[in-house]
Length: 226
Image (cartoon, rainbow, N blue to C red):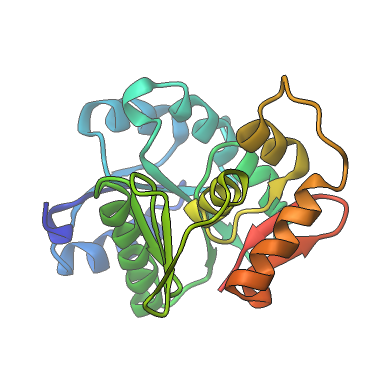
């Protein structure tokens, strides 16, 4: 599908913001749906199955994080891209937001051209994720079927756990993966490994792909950044 035909659901309790964001996305050719609260957003999402949902965090009755959790319980929406709209002065934890099932966040107030650019970037990720098992970000390409990693035209075959760790982190750039989540996803919760296992594998990935991609969040975990 051409990205221009993608559906975007905007959810915000401020009508002016909805109108302004919707107008700018429609100009780009996207099919835009809107809701002024979380309760209305859920049935719209179930009916339309949008490629992207942009959720305001601070909404009355049902905030964005609650809505996100409910959306992720719906099988047909499990893989929909969800981004939070957050005000700069909100006491909002990105980690909490990602834990609720979000893929990214957008800080407001935001200029129309910047907002459209962020949406385009998110929808490019949707397009890439839908193409077989290939992920390409920041000059790094991962082919899950062939178990290959490519950077700068150079192919490399990583050991199984290094490959799975890289695939997990790069699947959601900017997301902080907690150590427990990494262990469960890569090693499985029934496998006992030492506390330093993740650190050793991160060090090896840094040596092979570049130290700048793998950021340590002290006391929490790791994230892929570029």
